[in-house]
Amino acid sequence: MKHLPSSFRRHLAAVRAVLVLTVVTGVVYPLAVTGVAQALFRHQANGSLIERNGRVVGSSVIGQSFTDSSGAPIPRYFQSRPAAPGHAYDTMATGASNLGPEDVVDTIPAPGRNGRRSLLTQVCARSLAVGRLEGVSGARPFCTPGGVGAVLRVFPAAGTATRAVSVNQACPATPFVPLYQGVRVECARPGEDYSAGRTVPVRGAVTRIAVPPDAVTAGASGLDPHISVAYAVLQAPRVARARGIDVERVLDLVRRHTVHPWLGYVGRPVVNVLELNLALDGE
Image 1 (tube, rainbow, N blue to C red):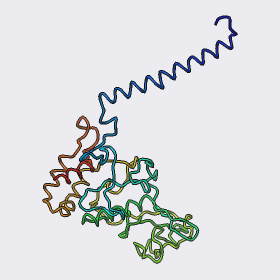
Image 2 (cartoon, one colour):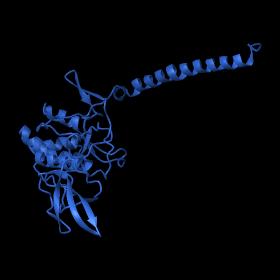
Image 3 (tube, rainbow, N blue to C red):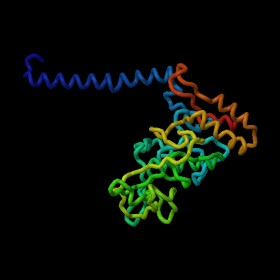
């Protein structure tokens, strides 16, 4: 070997290094990690699957929808946290919407232009739907009674408003406020460009919010298996009515399936929706 040209020896050493590292990192290490996982954490390593009557019904770490064929919530089941639009707990399309708190203006559909709901309008619509389902008020600040973002585009001149448009309410809708600084508020006309106006969210007079935040916002992964205790308690009366059982029995199951913070302080108490619904079916 030492009589070989130096350039050839360097290439040969590189090839040997590639082969050794391939075996160590591509074969030995994965087998060792897999072996340890199967020996010590078999349930978690295999997906934390939940079985009933010999059939896999889901995973304790991946959420799922409890809706009918039309997408409507099934009253006898607790509902999960919403998933990002279009993902609906699809593990092949997991992800968030990446919309931020300043996304408050909708794109109204018009000929040649697709519509898009802002994050604010999505939250407003979800809150209204949850409120109707649970029999409570779905009102939230910065939301119209119709479930869209309460946002104006104001066109000022000389420091005063000369025109105000409720940009998330397409004509012929009646604007959620009739006047802004003495100027009549208009509905939004599809296809008209209001980008030159100043964005003015209107908070409204809502002082009490009955629908919890996790009922109206999607998680970052879109696969959250848990809901807050507050959201579970909100749903308990509806589930009890649909099943014809006492609400205290339902609340007791909620307490038994509450996951408490790790080490007593890391995180907040949450409820695993799939496990809770399976426990209800086993009652």
